[in-house]
Length: 166
Image (tube, rainbow, N blue to C red; front, side):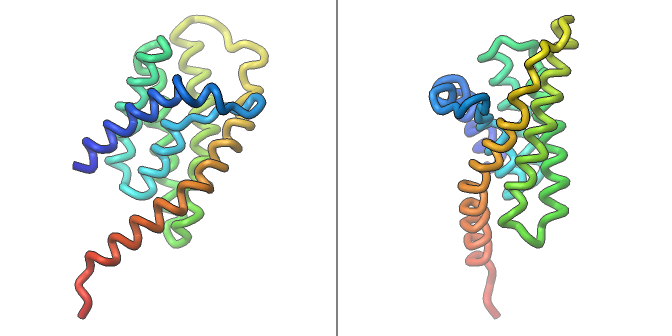
């Protein structure tokens, strides 16, 4: 059930990325909700759910943006895998894990997406294409700082109530 919910929410996040998010850009920083919420879902739900989120969300992004099919999915899968490693390394400070993992994954995702898209299109990377990478990573980490600890707290509290007290 968790995997089906991850797939459905990934499509919703992809739709939001192309409909709502362009109106809330801050300077050069563009929010990437598929990546940000995918990282939070991975830290909370595990690697398998994160991979489902990345694959379905990436395909939805590719279809909606008319990128080469699989470019976003591949980049998201790599970024979510790295985010899972960061989340596992920071499992003792679970509230901070989504923030750090989002910052790292955002940098990897943006650079890898630029590289893969330019390779598949056969065009060189434009000169100013990397100017949005750091502001977008900061913007994503800021959103993860607002949403991530809340989601982690809810999931940890829910898991704690399911335990049997002896």
